[in-house]
Length: 243
Image 1 (cartoon, rainbow, N blue to C red):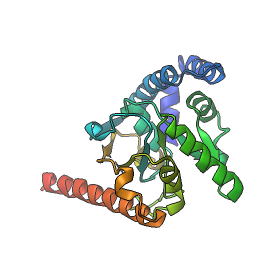
Image 2: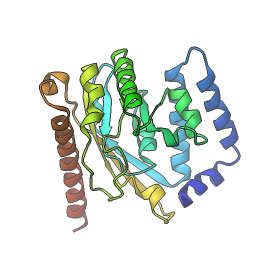
Image 3: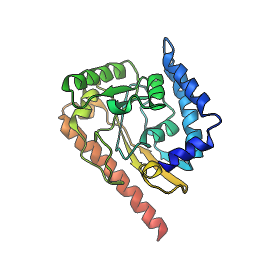
């Protein structure tokens, strides 16, 4: 967590104001998600710069033209959401585990963006979350869901994607956007404070017409396959460039 400390120390003079402003967005009625997202994106970029983290991203042209889609990336660590906030031009919310919902700053950002907390031990509550996300996506809101359920703790290797995470997309009949994260575990999981680069690729979307007849575990396997193929290609390219 040394890099988090670095971020805070380098922004200590302005951090309380950031927290105050983000907190205000969460208390607005009605909520202005676009304005809140724009401000949080600005703060995220400054925090990443302060923490000596560079974000390289590609594939923005693959994003669906209309809002109302779900990002499904691999999950490497606590830094993952910051990669999307830094790079994505389109406002989105995300689903998080209930244990993280009330942590300072995460709570304020969650309130501002309409983040939904899920209790993975409560089947009934989990179904309510699935239905709520599907409804909000149908209304034109974008979401980010980590289908592995927990971070892999295996570097750039993936865990199996859980089929249940794709029930939201099936209910909403929305585009699924696979996303490949590379080295997103490094900023917060490694002890080094040296400059680090995190990569994100937005892959071509999978539209409802393509997956409507698939079972959720089949959708999960296909999304995982596409992400793994992209990560393998990127890592192979890195090795080739160093030879």
